Amino acid sequence: MFATTIRDTRPFAMPPRSSATITTMRTEISFDTLSGFETELLAVFAADTQTAKGADAKPAPALLINDDAVKTAASQVLSSGEFKAGANETLLLHAPAGLKAKRLLIVGLGKQAKATVNSVRNAAGTAVRYVKPRGIRELVVALPVADGLNPMSAARAAIEGATVGDFDPDTYRSDRKDQRIQRFTLVAPGGGDRSALEAAFAEGVIVGESQNFARTLVNEPGNVLTPTVLGQRAAEMAKEVGLDCEVHSTEKLHELKMGAFWSVSQGSAEPPALIVMRYEPEGVKGGPVLGLVGKGITFDTGGISIKPADNMEKMKYDMAGGAAMIGAMRAIALLKPKVRVIGIVCAAENMPDGKAQKPGDVQTAMSGKTIEIINTDAEGRLVLADGLAYAKQLGATHLIDAATLTGACVVALGMVNAGAFSNDDETFAKFQAALETSGEKFWRLPLADEYMDMIKSDIGDIKNTGGRWGGACTAAEFLHVFAEDTPWIHLDIAGIAWIEDSRPYIAKGPSGVAVRSILEWTRRF
Ligand code: BES
Ligand code: MN
Ligand code: ZN
Image 1 (cartoon, protein in one colour):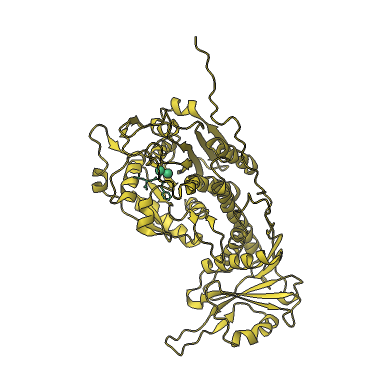
Image 2 (image 1 turned 90 degrees about the vertical axis):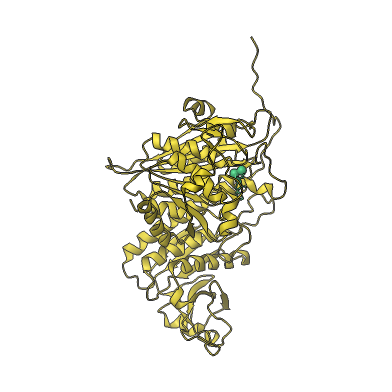
C-alpha cells in the first residue's frame, strides 16, 4: 500500500487582509421640502433645455425640481453660462442663500430631450463620487421632476446609482481612507404616490447592493478568492437571504461526468467548486424554470497555452460572469419574482501543471459530446458546457449564461457594449426589454451554422476554438451545442466586466455588469 499525502503546494500561503466590510450606507427616502434640509450637501439635477441647433444655440440649463428657494439660490450661476448641464457635469455652491443646506451641488443630466432614468442613475452616482474625496459623509439628493421621467423608475435608478457610486476597490490599502457615505437621503418633495416611491426606492437599494456584492467578489485577488472561497461567499450570502445553496467539488464533478469542467480544474492545486443556488418562490408550481449559469474562473493563466505576462494580473476577473449570477440570485431572493430560478457557477482555476490538460487532449463533456482541446486558454466554454448541461438536468426550461469569454468580443464591441447571443427570439425579446430598466448595454451578435462548421473536430465532435476570425461567435456556437434547443441567451462580458478608467459615477475596477439585466430578465417571466 502506498501512503497518500495531500499535496499542499503553498504551505505558507497567507492571504492578505482586506478592509472591505459589508456595511453599506444608510439610505432613506423623504418627502420634505428641499430648502429645509439641514445637510452638508444638497444635490439637485439640471438638464439642458436648449432645443435649437447651431452656433447661436447656447445651453439653457434648468433645474429639474419644483422648489423656488433652491431655484433662486442657483439662478445667478445658471444664467452665467459657466455651467452647461452636460451629462455628469458638476457645479458646487457654498452657503446657498435661503437654504439650510451648507452646500448646493448641481449635477447635469445632459440634453433634456435625451435625459433618461439611466442619466439619473449616473448623475446620482456622480453626486456621491463628488462628495466622497471631499470628506463629506452625508448628502441629500432631490428626485428630478421632468416630463417623460417616471418618478418611481427615477427613484429606483437614483438609489442604484448612488449605491454603485459609493463602491471603491482599494480594499487592501493599509492607509485606506474610509470615504464611504454614511447617510444618503433621496427627497421627493410633496411625494406623489408615497408608497410606490418607497417601494421603488427599497428595490433600488437591493439592486445596487447586489451589484456591489458581485463587484466585491470580482475585486478579490486570485490568492484570496479561490473556487472554494467563492463557494463559501456564495453560501454565506445564500444563508443571509434565504436561498438554498450547495457547493460541490471534485467528487461531484466526477459523479456527474463533467469531463469538460474537470479538464480545466485538473491542472490546479485548488479544487473546483460547483455552486448551485436555488430560488423556489412559495406557491409557484410548474411554469418555467430559469437556469443562470456563470463562468467562475478565479484565475486564468491560459493553462499550458499560457497567456503572455502583460496584463495577466487582470485575469482574476475571469469569474465576473459567475459573480454576476451570484449577485443576481441575491437580488432575486430579496425581490421575489414569481418564477423558479436555479443559479449555477462553475468555478475553477486555469493553471499549467504536470496534471494540466494539453492541446490535443480529447475530453468527454457531461452531455456525452467529445471535445478536442486546441487551446487550453479557451477554458470558459469548457466549464460552461457542463454548467449548461447540468442546469438542464436540474430542470431549467430557459437558460442564460454570463462569461468573460472572448477577447474577440472586446475587439468587436470595444468596452462599450457587451455581446449577447440567443437561439430564441422570444426569450431574447425579454432580455432586450430588461435592458430598458437596467440601463446596461448589450449588443446582439449572430449565431449561424457556418460558425458551427468552424468548430467541427477531425477526431471528435467539436474543438474548443474555431480560429481567429469570428471568435466570439464560434465560442457562442460551442455553448449552443450544450444549450441545444432549450431557449438560451449567452452574454459575453469580457470587455465590460472591468472598467479601465474611472468615470464620474463609477470607480475603475469591477463593474458588476449583468446583475441588473439578468434580474430584470427573470422578472419578465
Ligand atoms: N478569459 C479569457 C477571455 C478574456 C479576454 C476575458 C480578455 C477578458 C479580457 C478567455 O478564457 C480566453 O482566454 N479566451 C481566448 C480564447 C481563444 C484561445 C480562442 C481569447 O479570447 O483569446
Ligand atoms: Mn482563457
Ligand atoms: Zn478565461
